[in-house]
Image (cartoon, rainbow, N blue to C red; front, top):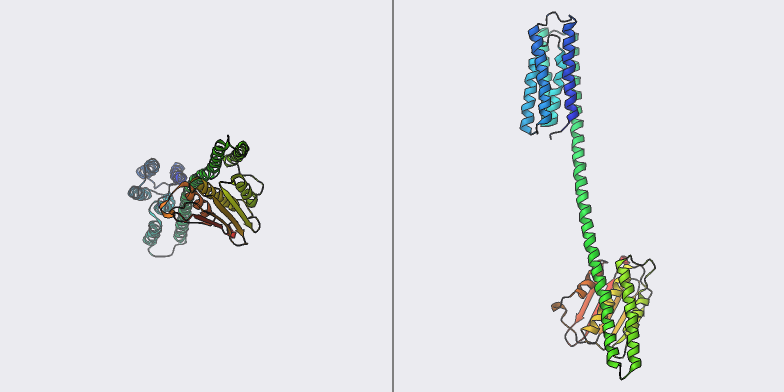
Length: 382
């Protein structure tokens, strides 16, 4: 894996400059009488060319082939510099070749070139000493080996840091995308929840108001007291609708939600001689908010459908909470329907609301046989 390491290239450039200045000082001080002017010129020109290579590497987009080409150019220039080096300063630059090879071409290339330079140094030392031990040569070889080993280790660390940084950046991008997706899903879920609340709450209350006002209109002349009672019921229902709209638009209320009390209020607002509602509550209230509210919305939807669509005259609402599943059952004597052949926002909203809590909704009905809706919420969801 290629590694983009501008500071490391600047360090290589500084090393070239240091060797160049050392050579100039060495010649100027008269410490290299055998170093000819031509060799010094080649020495300095080679180092200058290496500096140019680093600048080219800095500015051009990198590919594997491009990196391999520049590495080969560095190797050739280093040999040119070393051949003209009368003092041996350029030997320190050989550690850069395995370093760049490791960074740009991978571990195998870096280690292989380091081994090649060690072997080449051994061959050159043997040729110089004639195969005889020389403490100074051995010391130089040992320092070269240490330098190459440290170079490979440094390149390995740089590569791992680069890989870790890229992985961290990728994880951050994935996390950002996931957070955005979660936000979108949360917004969609909230829109669906508000749509269900509006349908289950406002729709129910508008139906009840419509029925009460129709009743008031029908009894306005023959039974004014019944008409007045229907108008009062419609007013109370409108007040409840307004309160529930405010709750849906704002935050949910902090106080506990009593399913039994809500069911009693719901039945009281709907019960009249033309539409009888009987409520049976067995067991304690369901704790929490989500479960009781979901069952309450099912009761609202079922009663609205029984009154608006089924022309029911009697509806039985039963709530049971035995500690396992909290079960709400709504059964009417209306005209019934085919559940599999019917689709609507009400049934879908009930199923979605209960499914989000791990609960279920079962609809049993057939034409002319009434309808029974059974909703349950497991204890774990509460």
